[in-house]
Length: 536
Image (cartoon, rainbow, N blue to C red; front, side, top):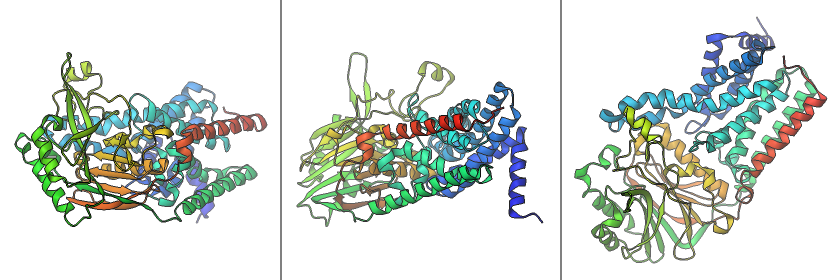
């Protein structure tokens, strides 16, 4: 009977010597398992197995390509692509649900969501790791190189083309309120590097340089202890609220398949009005009250329907303001332009401000490369007469009592780039969304978790109104103070949480992330000079 050490060595040798489809299968399984580290599962300890597994498989790819850089590059690419194809396939499978809302028209596009999208997203980390193969060694430096490479690929995925920073590595901490506080300093990309550094640690246990391995492990233990201590200290103070100001969030839970039916055009607004009136009953309406309805609440153009605005004004008591999503149209010589917007409606039924969504959803709100994709039958899945037009910039909206909020429509809340300059810093983040497209899948949970991280990064409370959920109120530390669960009709009211002072991330942004990368790269260069290791 083998000892535990002998079994570990046998397993490591098996992984290192695997090739062909076996190596690809190991990589795919590791990537698929890694998806469970993220919301709604939160099983982040799995990364202590899957990230070392990927490093060991890359070690095997290096030995296969010894002496031939092209062979090594290709072997690294194949292993990495198999891992990340599994990662994105399991992590983003819920996107296919959107194509079933109108299955007759869009079900044929499901392979795009299940195969082409994960395969395309896997290209970015695979190419970066394949480039890292040129500098791969047998020592601890390869673990640092691995962490740097994947951290950079995260940043690239969040910025290239339209950007899609969904389930980047930092979100592995999104289910732990204590660990979540680190986002206030390093942001999503900086925390992502720490995740990669910490969970790759088991690899160094088999390193022959015991002193270097012990030093690496000590650093990881200190980093982990620092994260826990910082988060614990930041959460000691209970959440404080603003006197004389409350929020009321409405979640109508209208099925996506019914939302745009012509026969429901006149039915939905009365439903909103009735639900809101019922929620207002019993509230103290002598204080300012902000009412929130979700993204694109109406199957009509609100600013072109004076009767609808009149009905809303008649329903709103004094000292209340409605913040709702809706579609608006701008007439021009080149035709109509449509915007996905946030409207501010006063208690007199007047539109007092508008924000137009800046980051549009590809294939949802507009069709990229329309001239090509439309020729093969691909269309966007959001019903509208034309593609939406993007707004010019993120903005703050001033309300009464010196309250300033920043609207973030739908998946704008997943982008850390939405942070406003410190001199425009709002008191509240408002995320209006419609996750009804994705049913009872992991997608709405992941979306809500990522919106919470924006609150922690900026030290600003977040209110979220979602058509089918998850609606919630989050304080500046990411604590959920109130919520309506997924696929339930409901509402909640709560006093508005206070804003915290500007976080280090607000003041310095991703410069902290780039500083970490620069330091680690410098360490790698020093290690290369002092402890040269053959790469072939």
